[in-house]
Amino acid sequence: MMFLLFTAACTRATTPGSAVSPKPRAIAGGVLPATWYAGGPTCAGQPRFIIHQYNEDFFILRQPACTNYEKPFLYMVFGRDRVLLLDTGAGKIDVAAAVDRVIHDWLARHQRASIDLVVAHSHAHSDHVAGDSLFRGRPATLLVGRDTAAVRAFFGIKQWPDSIAQYDLGDRVLDIIPIPGHQPASIAIYDRRTAILLTGDTFYPGRLYVRDQAAYVRSIKRLVDFTRDRPVAHLLGTHIENTSTPYKDYPVGTVDQPDEHVLELTRAQLLELDAALDSMRGKVVRSVMKDFTIWPQ
Image 1 (cartoon, one colour):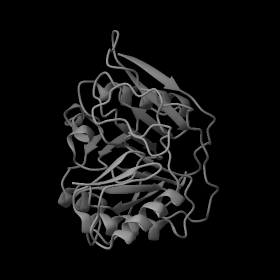
Image 2 (spheres, one colour):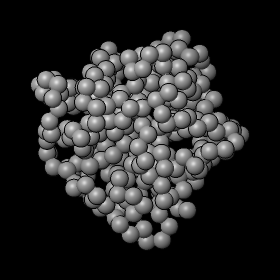
Image 3 (cartoon, one colour):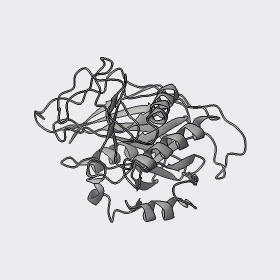
């Protein structure tokens, strides 16, 4: 297996702490690449998993186009005691090998022998869970279940979907926010260290498929409320389907996307989505917007 590794300027992890940081710390910045181009329909030998180092402890992976037209994004967040892998991809490629490469390099830089791996999901659709079997039964690995009950139990969410839980990777607290509507077990994850909000298939530059309209509207409102008094560096989803041309997406099933929209969205764009949903007054209709399309199903 070959890998394409992007590196970036990074911020050093700080000292251990409790589930809630004892004092505020500066937001850890990072670098996003100019392009996420995932290749075309031909793998031309062994497919390469794109691995981008946002900073020293935060990694973004993208599945190559030749293995699945969805080209999903995966995320790895390192704490002192555990590393979270969010999603396992769409299959037909050894995601475990890519994850092991990232962990191996991280351990070497930190002069560590091991770290536990927690595998969770942004939601339960097949293009985000197909690689689960590669992690089942592995040593020092915990695979979180895909259904709402399993997600709620693991993260300690008291009342689904209105409660927000905290999960500590070891001196790194993540906020777990239920956001059903695209899929019943959908969650968003806010990384306090980088101020990055991971939004899964609920919010990204593409077709925002709305399956439960009432739940989706409430979930977007929940994200708006959550981010009102918190810094947000980027909102990062799990696909890119829009082109760099405003109001234009790639057709469903497109493999080769050389002129993609950037991955990162902003809170201003989240507010734009929230306002559009409010204007629909409970009846969500398809609406093409500059950076995404609201797409009820």
